[in-house]
Image (cartoon, rainbow, N blue to C red):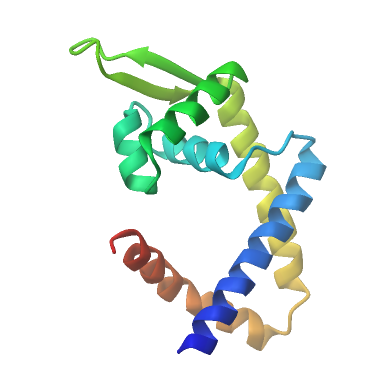
Length: 145
């Protein structure tokens, strides 16, 4: 089990890094630090969420999420607004520019990964396709631990 988990972790990291590197170069975006990228993507999937919830869901310290939010607001990628019902709570949303950047990245990832998958032998492509549900389950288990 240790061999599988170690190799799987390394391979998933390598796939992610290759896609991220190729996409950032292609769409000409300044790479964000991991913490900012994670916060940006999470808020993009959950607009209107608060800092505390982001910290809990990403298993980050609130102070680190707040710093990431400050930097993202400074880069005009995120908006932080007071909750109209409780002004002590900040609600986070992405700017239009951030959504455009995420869409450009997603298209680039789709292009690069699609091209790479197209160069695989059909059997390997089918194995990867059949592994998608198991990878989704793995993400859920890791997130809910």
